[in-house]
Length: 536
Image (cartoon, rainbow, N blue to C red; front, side, top):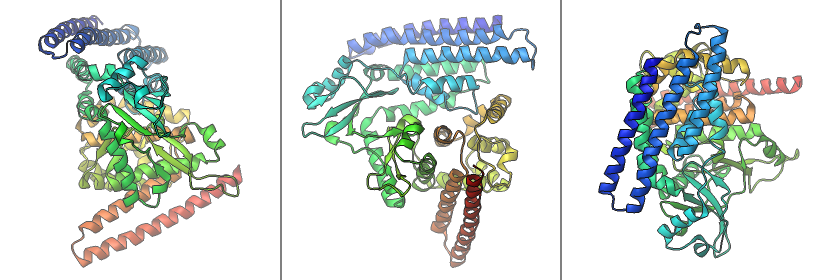
């Protein structure tokens, strides 16, 4: 315990030294005295806050569990209390520092396979709903810098109170001079000033903790932030991503293109720090009661969400990597009519296109082949394609488990519903047990996987959370969709590479056999649904 306390003390002293050095360097080199002064006061304070929180959490674990027997009921009870206290301290740190700390907290809320449930629940319940809000004066600063005018001059109407706020920006409702209602996304000014410094701060803390605790290795996460954050801060890139996303659906997935939508961009009213878009009336995908009131079946919506992202991952190779509930809206299909039973078709609206990843041909094909193998319980192919994606000979089973949230014996179970998650308490406890038992192996796996695959895992986690909100688990139909789209992507890839008539015939035969297999699965699925409806 004393050694851990000394670690915290060293961390605080290192923080003070780094903070002072940062301040001196900024004053000496800055061309913008106002920004430099702001940074010299905020960066050391954030560093110190980070160090104190880290030391406090470490000390709490060591002190509270000191002398309590391993495996005892008392230890589990105390550990739960410490997890909860520590998660709340970490949550408070994220809110105080804002910016990328909020992004980190949001990501932590998705890592059910890596961190204790208390952290997941605490972060997931707060990080999407309590993001920082910039004042109207700060919003005016951004407008002045970008347009040389205040919001009331740029727009005919501009509501100073935001309708939503996220980690990087907030959204205001406005009306253009020609009468169109729009949503204006404005970057937080404090984030613009401190983003680079916050990056350096988080990197410093993570590297220092790894030095003292080698098993705590989240350096891969820092690499990902360094790569993705500058792109997320460029709203013009976000606008281009949204248009490319819709174009991909029109060209490559026309069968569902009408069911997927992104707001129109007003390019003449957009800059790298300010984005003006068509205003969208929609409901968040996790608001099940309102969705049902609109006449939309949550089950049908879940299938649409799964198909949309399966098409992106396995067919387009251009993937929206932040599909949490706040970024996914649903509305009735504008051109659709109610069915005889009063049902309406859903249209999925994708928001926040700042974080996309492109999968090259080999990565996309291997990832599709891996999911095909997971759906069909093909152990040999699971191993083959896990190795190709970087999991290694020793961790391919763990990789499959993280992708599906299923233990290996369930992953290779030949039953049709082997990947379905019921979402009950016993399953959550089982997942947490695996997470705690294999924490070091999971950390090792995440470090060795390519960054693009790490973001696919993040996307997977977000979609699982959405499905859980709609279903309290997952459905067999969603895996059926994933299996069909991934299998078709594998067939298309083989077809594009076939160089002889014999290879072409072989691929065509595979395609026919696959269609027959899915046809059989579809019949079994219909029979299962009929049996369920009769038992209700």
